[in-house]
Structure formats: structure tokens, C-alpha cells
Length: 506
Image (cartoon, rainbow, N blue to C red):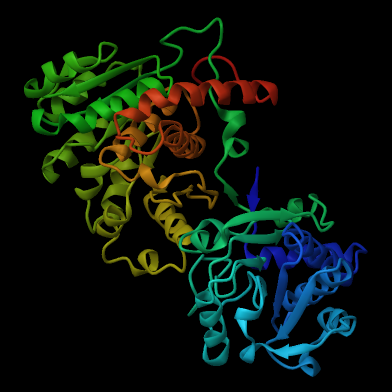
């Protein structure tokens, strides 16, 4: 997997590498060289200002400044703090700098063309105050392009939060692995393009660290993806059910059902009231519409063991009705996607929802921020968790299912702490009905037997890729059809990588 390392885990990776025989000074020289390489892509006679902080991030800046000066660039270096206060490797590399050292608080940004921000790195865990905050605010207002070392100064590498102030970079150079703050908003918006530099830390340290967070891409779930088999058939690809409301809100269920079909489910049935049955039957020829007025009707329908996944929530409306349908949909032989109105129906009652979902073969909850806040109202241990990543993990533990908290940085978390963070969602994905399609894609993958955490993560990635394929101006109706070219590329990549898992339901 393309794992993410929290700042504490990154510090441990450094320590393990040093203990194995690579001096910390060597790691700093390599990091500074990677930053210099990024800046050297700018043409002569770019005037470069390097802002150095009082710690190891500043040490990386001193190295970058020295190398860029050796390569012929006009380089100025400004330090926030005193040279005499530098310690360890940072003090050593600072001693190798032969140019002037300006006072960062007094630097003139108008006299440079490019700024290297080496003030504070991913480990910043407190708000910038006083002169440090004033400096970063001036940097943000300077209008100069910025290359950030590790993370833009002021961004918390664990949470992505702005710690008092931050200046947006056009490019960020980080080391070994990305950090959650590179993906979580608003940090992601400040990073620009993120380059991960190899500074000689062996991948084997990950075996010791055992990180549980990863970038949401096919490396995170590809081996579990249900590629079709030449010997397969539609029942082997699973039968998904989407529970629909009445005619006025049937569009949400139709979008979910189309998403499930395009995701690869062999069959998709919409369970719906008589008032919307003809709407569903006429809207998409591959869908089957079965009558369902009450929870008892849904229980009878789902007695057929071939129904392997159920999507409950889009367009259901009334909370009491939504609760009764969700309770009817849960069964030990079925996985379930809980979306929209089925989530709102349990506002302030996550423990009650956990009891309902306990008998299911697996569950995915798909709230946006508003639904999440309503569901977990009265649970400050979840709502006040330090980051979106930790909120989602806490929610998954509380409910006992996979939590999928939507947004430009959608987080998927399992009760055991595994998590993925998406980075591929384009801004035009924020449109009415897109979440219904996402719920359907997840249901379609579950119907094919994909494990719950992997299915939720894959659904999020596919959703984002479909939006990128459809392009600006998309509406939710475009997303299912846009999955076709996405699937073509994904299948080819997975087969080429040898991540082939053929056959029917596990």
C-alpha cells in the first residue's frame, strides 16, 4: 500500500534508520539536496530566498541553500532564531553555509523570485504565535511562489489543520512517505504538488512501524478487487438490492441502483412502493423493480438468499419508516450500505444504530459532514477528535462498521483502525446525487463479495475517477457511465500487476 506516516511515525522511521547505521546528518543532506533539486528546476537567474527555522526543517533549508549557491543560483538565507541556538545536525549544516544569514523577521520578499519555506515541518503541533505567525502571514501575502520543505509552515502534519497561519505552496517536497496533513483538508489545499523524495530510508522500517493509514488508490485494495472470470455468470457476480422511497424521491434510489450495476453487480433489484415502481421500471432497462410498501414486505423479499448486499437510505424520507426498513434489511448473510435518510433517522443515537447493524455480515456508513454531526450529536469524544481521520476511526469503532466520511478528502476507516484517505476527487464532484451513486457503487462491490473495508475504499476511488473522467459540468447521472473507461484501465492495471482474484462470491 501507499502508506501514510503520522509525524511521530516518521520520527520513528528516522530513528530506526539512524540506529541501523545511516547518520542523521546523511539523511539531512539528502533531504536538503531533494529540495535544492526541486528549486533548481526554475531557470536562471531565479533569485531564491531560503527561510530556515530553528529545528531540523531549518537544517534541510541550510543544505538546500548551500547546494543551490554551488550550482550558481543567487541565494539569500534568512533564519528565524539565532545561529547559536541551533543544535545537532542542524547546527552542523548551518556551519557549512558561507553566505550571510539574515534575520527572517526583517526579510524583504520583494527582492526574491522564489521562496523555500523551511521554517516548520510536519511535526508542528501547536499554533504559531507572535513573530513566527507574523512572518508566515507576511510570506502568505508576498505573492511569491513557495516550495515547502516537508509541509507548508503552519500545517499540522497529523491533522491537516492550520496552526494559526500558513502560506500556500506551489510545491511541497516531503520525505519517504506522505503524511496525513498532505491529504486532509485544509492542508491539502496549501501543499500544491507534493513530491516524495527518497532519502535512503528502507521500506523495511514499515514492518516495524505497521502504519494503518494509506492513500486511497488501487494499491490499498487491488488484491481484493473482484475481477470478472471468463467462467463466471451474473449470479456469481452477486445480486444487490436498493431500497427506494416514493415517486417524489425515487431519483436517489435510481442513481444508487445504476451505480451498483456499473460497479459490476450481476443483478440489481430496486425494492420500492407501488407509487415509484413504474418510474424505476421505465428508467433503466437492466434494473428490476419489486413492490415493497412496508418493512414486512422487505423482510419477505430478502428471504431470497441470493440477495447479497442492500443499500438503504437514499430518498427514504420519514425517519421512523427509514428505521424500520433498515432493521428489516439487516441479516447475517448480507452486507449493507447505510446512507442518507437511514443515517439521519438515528440522529444522536449511534449506539442504537450499532445494535441494529450488529447482526449484519458487514456494514458501510456513508455520511457527509452534516449527517455525521447529526448521527454523533452528543458524543464529543468523536466530534471533537483532533482530525477527520481520527473522527472517522472513532465513528467506526463506535458503530462497529466501516465509516466513510465524505468530502474532498474522503476518509474510510474500519473498527480496527485501518484507514484510507482519498486524494483524487475533483471539485466538480460536489453535486446533487453524487453521494447516491457512491452508495450504489459500494453496494455493487459488496454484492460481488469484496471485503467491506476494501469495498468502501474502492468505491470512493472509483467515484473520484469517474468524476475526473466525466469532467467539469458533470451531473450525478454522468457518473455511472463514466465508470466504463475507468474500469477498463483498472482491470488492465490489476491484471498487469498480477493482482488477479477471479471467480464469484467468497
